[in-house]
Image 1 (cartoon, one colour):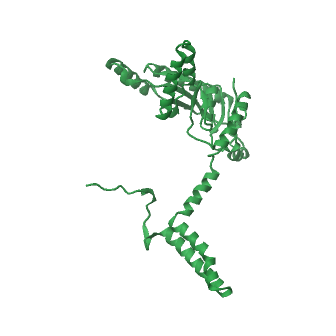
Image 2 (cartoon, one colour):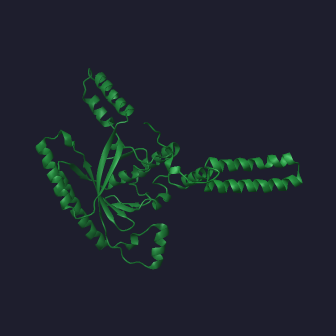
Image 3 (tube, helix red, strand yellow):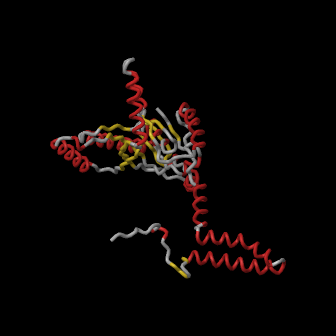
Length: 327
């Protein structure tokens, strides 16, 4: 026996009176009483029909609040205006959103003092391996899990497939007689990928390492809450110690993963900048691969910031909301 699954389950509200929820009943009472008192007051000053017409906009507004969730829609628009939806990494407001203080020496330094290294992992098609190879990979993977004595985070993101470099390479290698066929083939492949919305998956392993922050004056602590600047609380000796421990953990992680037949690469400073900026631009280059970000911006804003990004890149990205040093 078939049945329909009810919709809008998240909008369920207990009926209070007359088929209305408590919120709807309160809105209805406020607007009806307000309209009644306004009508009574105006009817003493002017003709009754004019007073009736005058309260109609208030009643219409009440209907929107009671039956069409106007308050929720207004709240959503207000939150959208306050959000960073149309913001890029050039804007100072982003510094309150991103917890990054600095990127240097292939390390991400957070405002809390934690430092992080990022490893890009190339996936392996496990099902094309033989039974013996699968068992060897699983054994190596178990050893990696048992060897982890540090924190590990896994980042997985879906990105668009960029074949432009491959396409140009194929056409360049083709002879004069084969160029038309090569162009037709690469164009067809590009069209299929676009129409089928074929996307690639990229995997990253993030290894954090905590470092001790120096005690600062209480005035500096309060100032940091508003400015987000914790740099004065970092000890150079502690940073060197944490960096050494992080480097050891990353080498251990990469060596163990390579035994699982996985290709790994530590992201350098430029790659880390590209990874972060790709969440705020429509396209950003990481290891010469064009990625599509999760966060999309308004088209006009995007065009403006794409131009700024090219100027910005020539200046070694020193205008990020967090400081960036490139070696």
